[in-house]
Structure formats: C-alpha cells, structure tokens
Image (cartoon, rainbow, N blue to C red; front, side, top):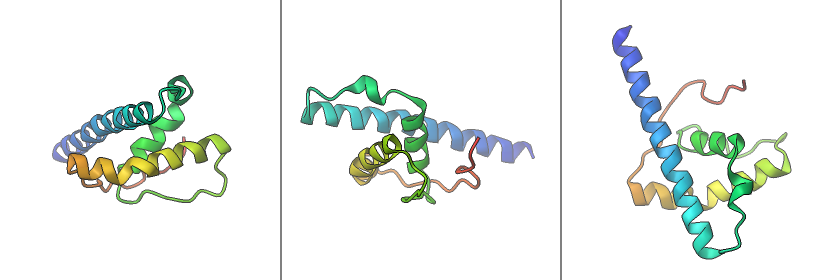
Length: 102
C-alpha cells in the first residue's frame, strides 16, 4: 500500500501545483483584459475548489444547485481551461471521488 500512497501524494502534488498555476494564469489574463477586474472578489475557497476540479478528467460542467457566484467562477474557469491546457501541455488527471462534498 506504500506505493499506492506515494502515487496518490504525487498526483495530489501535481494537481495542487497546477491549481495555483492555473489560478495565476486566469488572473493575469483577466487583469490584462480588464485592469479594473476585482481580484479580491475571486480569492476564496470556492474558486480554488473549482479550479482544482477543472483539472480532472471527470470535470462536471453542469451543477443545478450552483449559486450565482459559483456559476460566475465556473464560466471564468471554462473560458481559460483549454487555453491553459494547451499552454502547459496539461492532460487532465483521473482521480476517483474528487467530486465528493465535504
């Protein structure tokens, strides 16, 4: 089981690195497009979670119970997702049960 644990830790590390990298990519592009973009409105756990999940192969595009803020975040993520994947040569990772709620 040690090998499986090492693989999981490596996968999570890779995902977390890309989560922050993708977040930075989005913010840089948004600020280039609109210098009045309110960055402080987007520094929260909801967008971090959305970006993390967007890096997975089983990313869910629709969520009926999403709040307005979650929809805005998802639209932002979707706007830059494919560009980021191409720019970084990123391939989404398969991670079972990542979509489970707290």
